[in-house]
Image (spheres, rainbow, N blue to C red):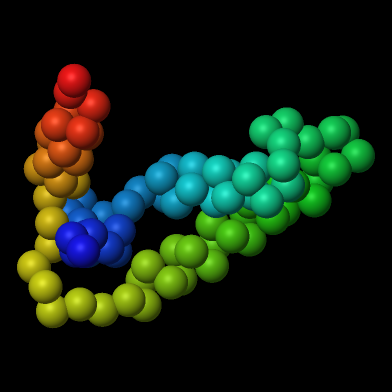
Length: 88
């Protein structure tokens, strides 16, 4: 099984916008909606904020002895793997 790089071991580090986007994606998935009703908007937004906050704490606390991976290089490798998989 191939080893996947951990998001905390990238240079540059995940931005607050990336952490927020991941939290938003998670809450949307769990809630089963991309756009909450007006009655649920505050709860939805609060959950996104809290998950982003705790995710940042997690990323800040993780340690590794492996050298950091470059985001662009890893993205290009992933694109190349996908192209190979989807080539007829």
